[in-house]
Image 1 (cartoon, helix red, strand yellow):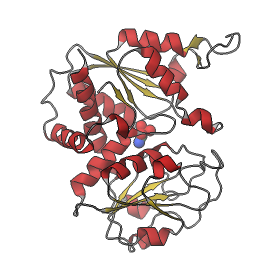
Image 2 (cartoon, helix red, strand yellow):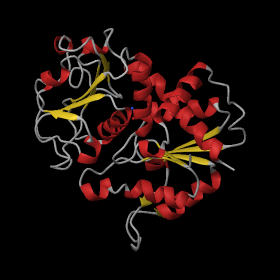
Image 3 (spheres, protein in one colour):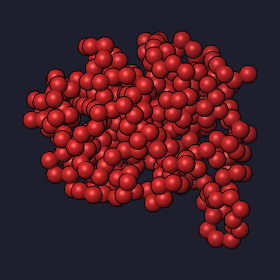
Image 4 (cartoon, protein in one colour):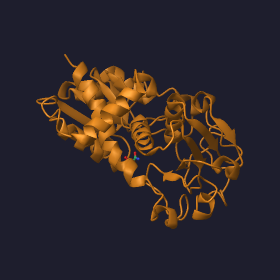
Length: 316
Ligand code: CP
């Protein structure tokens, strides 16, 4: 694999889930594979899990890792083409990405959406430019509209814990005080559709995801209806796609609680983290037996390790 930016870059999702579980069972089996190979992890936005789990995965594979918070530690980056750089930006992404490609065999790159211009965000302009100009294999550490490493870890978590072949998986919108990207929800939906589960999305009116991500999911604005009999409930806030980047409601009544859990099939409750306690998810769920948030965080390592292994195998 030379590029990991979405589920579409994976030829067989069952195979990559098996690889992640295999890496989990034997983390150092491929510790020679990454010898003398350098991974650069480049962040334009903050991170805890993605940064540490991908770093750990690379170290398990014998790679050396360099991390740079480009937004804070680098020169102010220009991403538009053809501009006269007589303002505040200092370095163009063409040179910056090219230079990083000189130092790294593989690069992980994170860049969030602006949530102002939908066409610009959904064209993945910054991510695609970085891929083009760095000239080495790239894995997404979350882009404007997708978070594939998170989704792979989520799929691994469900596959490990499911009790039926085709579990009912519900993605439910949750309240938040800030407008958040649709990336985690988009990506989760994309991977769940590919996994062919009984997949349901529920959100208040006005929060429909882009049709290409909804796919074959059943969509309802009635959260109770969605939760009925669920085996897994994935809780996540996102801002509006249609009224782009806006918060349309305070979401009163949408927080997942133990009372709502009674509607489900004793569902495992998932969240990618970071989570706002008492706003997106209740304390009682996060501190209770149904929470899978640490399982997901743990699986971030094995998801990254499976992806990095596939990329390393493709290097000549
Ligand atoms: N879930 C996730 O991507 O966490 P970070 O933003 O902390 O990396």
